[in-house]
Length: 68
Figure 1 (cartoon, rainbow, N blue to C red):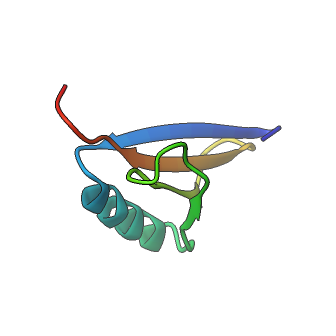
Figure 2 (cartoon, one colour):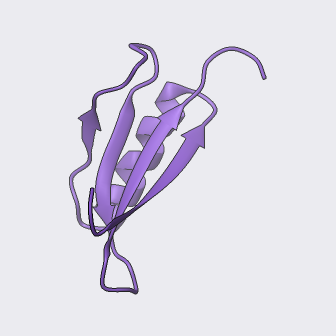
């Protein structure tokens, strides 16, 4: 995504990732979307988040499963 900054957040589990995406996207007045993921168990949620700079900030939130 040219001209965009992309930030990644990783949550402990998929339900937490979705809850974070819902809360932050609502605050940003944006609708989050699910984008393609390599794992069927760990979706990736994405939305545009306000940025102080001129470039757009894309926030992606995903999760992990299993143990670290």
